[in-house]
Image (cartoon, rainbow, N blue to C red):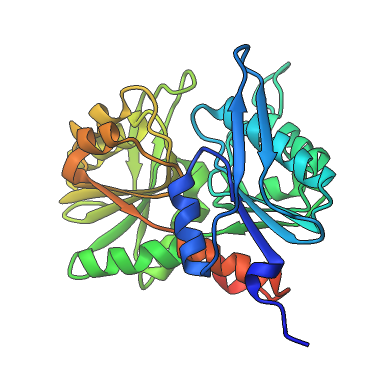
Length: 322
């Protein structure tokens, strides 16, 4: 009997959030992107129709819940439900960017833990497992009752940093105390580069007040490391603070380029030499043009395609986490 090909066993679908990314993943897998028709009714309701036979097959649904987050999240949930009702064998929600991950704990009374709510919604809608990239907090995986594979962008970004800044005196900088472990892991991959921490006091969400540097950054090339760049205020002010403390130059690596509001203009006018992000979120041409030469976008499509291969074949993907 002739063995089934990968295309007979796997179906890759994509929502509307990052179709270019999905096409890149499919190209690396040598698969065709499956048909998924998404319609918005006049009152805003979303309707989906799966244009592939998914019965008993291993389905990977790619969707970042980026802006507009609520629309893309609802689209993801509805498609998961459709796949479950179409008797898909296993459905993996592939979320290069996991929206609502920042709301992962109660910071004051009478507020939600929305990350946990989204985890429950994905499971109820029909996800068998989740494949994502650099959750805001790794312990968020405990919110799920299904397997979660939380990939790391280090295999993609570290070679780029080494190639571009190999002759510099590097210091890895965490923009806040909560990101120290991320900075340590990053520094370890850069031949145990020294680290520094920025102590910041944030009075309100998306606002940054006082900053001071803990560590010596004089005459150093500083690599600011964070998981998300949203309004750009934090990394822009952090870059200014580091330059004021004597840093030679400041480069920022932020895995997810949310870049909301006036972020592009803020970053373009900042002291940053370069902002490096991944393609976990689709950027508009306007954003790219506004930030200009300061922006470098790295593709993590191959990282995800390899993870998909290993999930399908039931192989370990732990080596992709580091």
